[in-house]
Length: 213
Image (cartoon, rainbow, N blue to C red):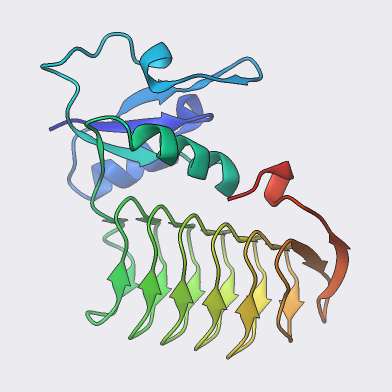
């Protein structure tokens, strides 16, 4: 069955297309759901699908966690299902770890034993995840980030490129960890933290780029 690459950046999804190719899958079908500044319903931006062909799997293209969450909600009302986790063959994922449906693990990622990733998480290239970490759904981890062991990351968290999160910490839902930040203590929900050591710069009612999971 086909795999649809759906999201506000579908047209810029070369990296996911390469991930599909490197993993031995057929090319994805691009579906860009963002029309101007307004969200479109699935029936608006996939008019070519009929009852016979509207089956298959989907992956959500890179975008803010909150946007991915809204799109996944829209897709739940359709026959499309989240694709199995997509893991680049150059990455190392321990056999005891669980990667949720619809999640993507890009090239050169290391995932330790006992890790659990939720659905629709996006782990970018060269990320290191220590043992016994738990990620909820719609988490994004930027390139080169290091997540130490026994870290709990709640839904909708965005971790910037090169950030470091020390062991046994908790990152609250919809929090944003800035690029290069070194997190040495728990981060509350909806907080943005930057720096070394990371400090809260703001608390808001929304997550990365103003969207909430």
